[in-house]
Amino acid sequence: MSGTTNHLRAGVVGFTGYSGAELVGILKRHPGATPVLVEHRAQTADEAPVFDDGTERRPLSAEGVAGLDVVFLATSAEVSIESAPMILKAGVRVIDLSGAFRLRTKANYQRWYGAEHAAEELLAGAAYGLPEFYRDKLPGQKLISNPGCYPTAANLAIRPLVEEGIFDKAAGIVCDAKSGVSGAGKKPSQKTHFSEAVENFSAYAVQSHRHVPEVLMNSGLDEAEFSFTAQLLPLHRGILESIYLRTREAMSHADLAAVYARHYANEPFVRIYPEGRFPDLRAVQQTNFCDIGFRTDPQTKRVTIIAAIDNLVKGAAGQAVQNMNLVFGLEETAGLL
Image (cartoon, rainbow, N blue to C red):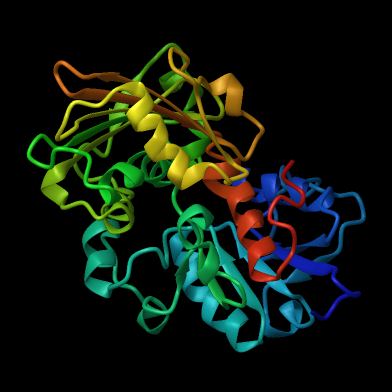
């Protein structure tokens, strides 16, 4: 590491956005890291005062990132694709919060993101940064692709049941997911305008949401087995997913609790609720936790799972810092508890 012993210098590109600002806040209280604001474009008058507290600023260039240990890209996929190769060439690790490197092939990216991928050579080597699944593969990685917010909650809820062959594939899985408006990013649009979002509730990207392939790839599902709908809640932050499936055999709450315990008993950021309790957004806002509660109906073999995260923390900035901690051999929970 180029900084003082065991102390990281962490650049943040996109620090005026919601996820980027969250990142800077976490890094400021992190015992082993210091944030550096990396500017990739001229700041507007409204954005200029953000973190105007003496935090070091640098331009996004090979010279600007020199000496940093890691750069977080809290940017659009297009900016990440353009910037990541230059940062990596400068010998600096990258943790990308966009969808630029989450999918493994150029064809998959073209299908779900509707654009050509200009850094195809990086796709196969990017590590998918969902620590609960891939913790052992993260130390020393040069390019980490931070998971999407919806897939983080969905995969943590679903994958244990898929891995253990518990769910009925013929019945499929339905994921009804709701997110606060900050999940759409800071760039304004008609759908996220206050007058459109307040006192409203709407679905979007129906049957075409770009987070779907992340669930398929990381939970081992076929596309025909997974139905996903994203919906916009008139609030700032938080994701709550209601997931419906059937099991192959009748299962009690205790049976399913044992499955989750086998996978998550020692996970610092996954909390499994006792029978009769379910998470809500207040339980996870401003935290890096994924909370999971469920109910079984042995007679019909139905299972309803409720999973909740903060889309800006476990769904973005917090998980990115969790990945940084693992990449550099720091305490995984550092800065997050």
